[in-house]
Length: 337
Image 1 (cartoon, rainbow, N blue to C red):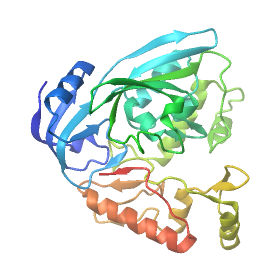
Image 2: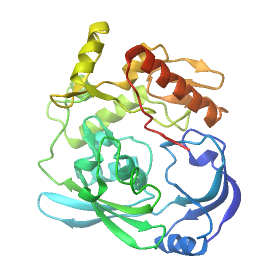
Image 3: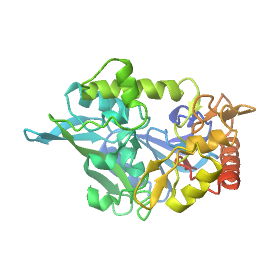
């Protein structure tokens, strides 16, 4: 176990923000994690995974535990389904590709989402009509206070749209060490009705798609819209798509007949935050060394040397403008640190 001082986190967050950790420890095993938790009880903790869902606006005056627990294995299976266990440090997209290679279905729509396995349940990641909760079976997590290991079922996690118990009442109390997902081995339930998946498949003349075909379609769509964090600093979708009442949507539609929407229920409608931001005039706007991506208004970018504070101030400006123009509050999907 090595604890280092004043470590730059620039290469550990996808925005590429050059914030420093007062203390830093690379966690490569559950044993090391337990050891650190025992020996560093006096220090406040900051848990770092893939660094893909956060914006650092300041240095971290804490012990940063960088979770790099690795490993994938099949825990159990039947003729129809399989439960796969992945350690928290595994890259999410590489895990999706591993499942596709084994013809395990259920997460193909979640291809190319940045980040690691351990943070997926915290955020209840989702894309193109699928959420993690749809395939989630359980996860194991260590209590930072009493060091006990607890298994969380789907019900325990209180999943909601980009929400979970780990972001709410248990925030900061547990460190996820592994995740179990229940996937299909055959008779896969394909989801092609969301976004441009069907159009992408038709363009490739694919009439009876496989889970691999859907993954390739999702990857192609995301690559045309979302910048690669290795080339330009970003954290994917910065804002959540707001869910509003049907009544509020009807009023919005009076002034903006072209507004797109997705029906949630008889009482609620989801409106794309990207459309709101683009209509408000922010798409492609650049301010000094940061701005809004040219192809996707949901994505805020760091062109090189922007500070987290500057990007956060831009996010606040976007929120205020959207509220003023549409009377809709958009919330950040990215965690502001």
